[in-house]
Image (tube, rainbow, N blue to C red):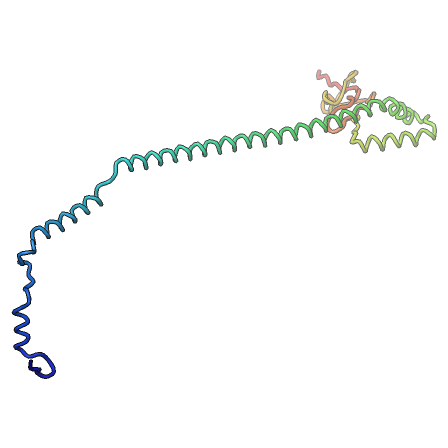
Length: 215
């Protein structure tokens, strides 16, 4: 065997090529139609598997979505009911507090009025005595204490000569003729002083009222 330039000789390479079996697509053992058809069939089957959807799975998914939506709507409805109930309870609580507060104020006012009504006769007697100037010196201190107590309770006097007659605060016990139209229906005399507390009349003032008669 000759070596040409460190390699195999051309004759040797030719001999090896002639003796080696030829590999070709047309080799008696290679069926190209069968091989390519089988490959194409596999590709088609893969394509079919990708494109075809499972109707049963889709139906199950739709059922689950509908169920979830129904559950969500039920939760929302329940939440609204809880919110409405809470708001009603809050309104009832606020109204109850207001009612209790009003009831407490009403009871407090009634207690004050009852106490004032009990003390009024003694106070009226002292007031009349002062007007006539025959009140004993010792009773002056008592009169001042009663006045201070009435003032601290918020008691206000009703009935002054010259003010307009108001049937809500005054009780007319007689009329006096007047020649002036501008004084018509005004108080000419206070027979008994009236009292009110926090807008509530404890006792109306007993008065006489001017009456103008046009000729």
